[in-house]
Image (cartoon, rainbow, N blue to C red; front, side):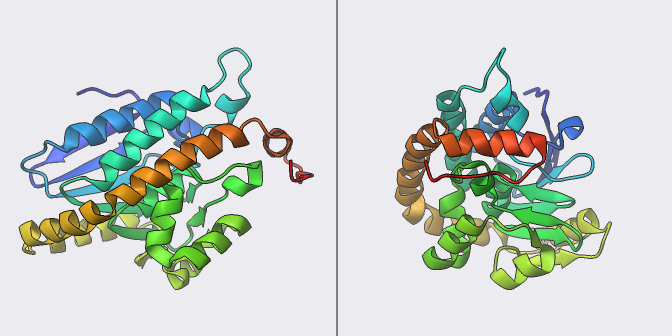
Length: 260
C-alpha cells in the first residue's frame, strides 16, 4: 500500500508510521485523513507486527487539522467527509492489534493531540508543546479526542482541559497524566527505540490480549462519542465563533467570541 502523506515501515515485529507533510507541520488534510484511515484498517490484519511507533517528519509531530484547508474557498474541506474519515481513523486506531507508541517532538495540537492521546504509550520531548486547542477556533475535539482524553484523565479533568485549550509543556502534560515519559531534547526517537526494545523482550502476546479485552469493552462508548463528535463538529463549523476563530488565527490576533 502506497501513501503520499504518510509512510509505513515494517521492520519485522515492529513498525514505524510517520506523518509526512513537513512543509505543513504535518497538518492533516483530507488526503492524510483518508490515508491514515486506510492504513489503520489495513493494520487490523497484520500478523507479524506487535509494536507500532507513530511519529512526525520534520520539526513537529502534528499541528492538527489543516486550517488553511478550512479557509480554502476554491476547494473547501467538506466537514462531513472529514468526520467520516476521522471516525474510521479512531475506530481502527483503537482496535490495532499491537502496542502503539506515540513519539512526540515539537508540537502535538488539536487533531494531532487526539492521535497522540489514542496511543498506548506516549513519550514526548521535554521542549514539546501539547494542546487540545480546538476551542481556540470555536470547535470541539474530534478524532475521538473526547474519548481518549477522558480515558487518560477522567471526565471532570477532560472537560476542564478541553475548555481551557491551554498549550502544555511536556512536564505539565506528564503531571496531568496525559503522557507517560519525557525525553531530553533531541532524544525522543531514541527513547522510543528503547521502549520498543523493552517491549520486544516482553510477553507481547499477553500484553496485546489485555489491550484487546479492555478496548473491546470500551468500543461502544468510543463509537457513540465519534457519532456525537461528527454531529457536533458539523454544527460548530457553521457558528459565528468558528468563523471568527479561524479568521483570528490566520490574522494572528485574539479572537472576539460571542458564544454563537
